[in-house]
Length: 398
Image 1 (cartoon, rainbow, N blue to C red):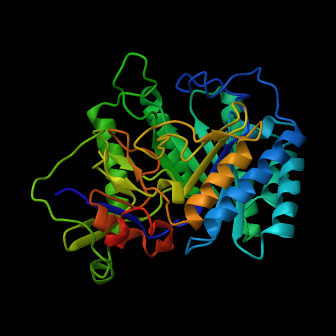
Image 2: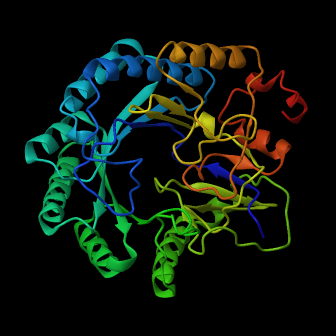
């Protein structure tokens, strides 16, 4: 069988990822130079504030037509915490949100970090953020790994003490340090800390690829982890059967994309529908969605501070018209142009639908999508005000 629709059960938030800059205090071999270095200038506080104004207005525009009015704003890099303006900016951002937008929608602020920071900085993050994801890299030297583990323990204690703060770990599964990664997962299990075992890279399909190639034993380890997680999600068979099935049934079983398959990066639960059957999942072994109707723009926004570019999604970079790339730049009036165009499409009922331009879907997998137009619109109507599509020519499918 093939899955005709991927629909969100949890994690219905509007997810913003904001790359604050490429400067990083690590130098991982699998991180391309376009994502990290040790020399890029730090973004100024003024430039961060100006782009935050665009971000807030962009979110606010979409929220007017979304059912679930929650945004998760995550700072990434590089290493975002090395910017000396970071905590001052976060505090300003929270005050700006509370003054102008809190009465309209909920925002959660989080950061993805390698954990190589002082105890003082970690304490400030735990006091001012809703969430931190620590990405643990086994390539780091022993001193940095020891520091990261100390911060993980500190963040875990802070999460126990403060209900408004929580922690998760991305364990970057290095093919040549696989046992060390497994040992870390055992350590995290013993401490009751939530983690996601992350495959490095998307596809090991070219000499220039940064993706790791895993042997069969390693592949089986990853598969077993997600299979157990999926089995736990579907223990309540009756509840699983009540999930609304969307899509046309097919008889042929297909396994496309990576041998390992793909988990949701945020470990979100999805509803995978096939004919009249549905099941919960955080992992999908079907990944080829090229040509499918996708709502990724309704659930994601990515900002690159250093390049001044804005994308619907960081990795898939899907645009309207079946293309890939950035949707605009924030500088020189670009922010105002993007906002004006978005508002006009929404207000006039001419909002286009993204047609997936990629052969395989990676991060963004959890965004509601369907191979068939009519099933796509029946899937997203619980998430989105369908009037935004009224004059697109797809109205017959609503």
